[in-house]
Picture 1 (tube, helix red, strand yellow):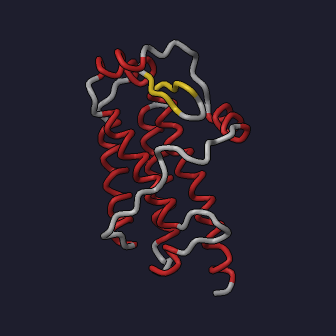
Picture 2 (cartoon, helix red, strand yellow):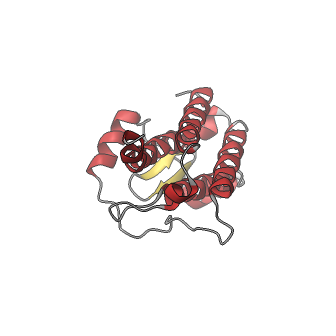
Length: 176
């Protein structure tokens, strides 16, 4: 994927989520179903992921190189990502659990989600192709991913949580 395709994929993914939850009531936004995260928690989790990725993208490239090394593996595509993620055992506790703010509201969480993803897209625009391919970051499921692969994961991750949000919204919408 080119840098522009990555940006478009992230942009489309996060906009789909915003569109889906825009009509959800404040009560439904925080409602948990079947012991799973609420829409608010899914959104806060995605916001945290974008915030941390944005921090990495704005770090000095030499610092990323020294800390995480050079990515020398061949590019792994979305099919590899789907297969690997589906087969993975994800720990029940990571450092990516949603962190709800005291001032949390649907509008606050949506604003944070939008801001962090727009900042992420802006940061991606500052990266050249060689850096996207040869610098890497660790991932809890995939091991080390190139920055390009990690950005591909960001869109994949948003779509993954969009499906979880769909499962929360679907029963409500079917009664409408």
